[in-house]
Amino acid sequence: MYINKFKFSNLYNFLKNASSSEGYKHTDAAKQKMVEIFKDKSKHPFWGKHHDEISKSFISKPGLLNPMFGKTHSFSRKNERPYKK
Image 1 (cartoon, rainbow, N blue to C red):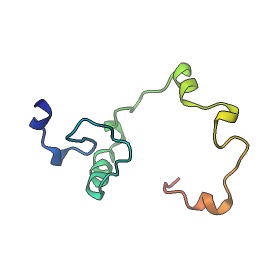
Image 2: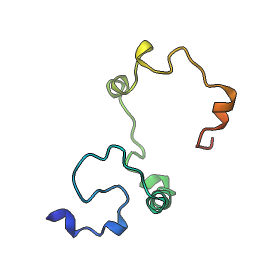
Image 3: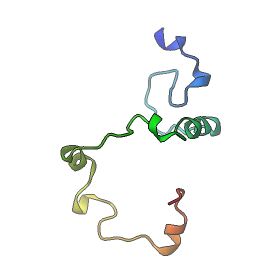
């Protein structure tokens, strides 16, 4: 098989079996590889690109379809967010 020719130790987002990746959890080693690769933002595959308005309309959920519609995060929940500003 063609996919077996790859060294999976160098990849971070591949499954050897082409099945659903639903519920897959990245290992700490895979997360670290992603951090190292994308420290230089220009290496990110979406660098310099933007969604057009049609794509944005498909991505966003308007009004009542959005689970956060009419809600706000509590102050304590805002502080629990995993990313830095």
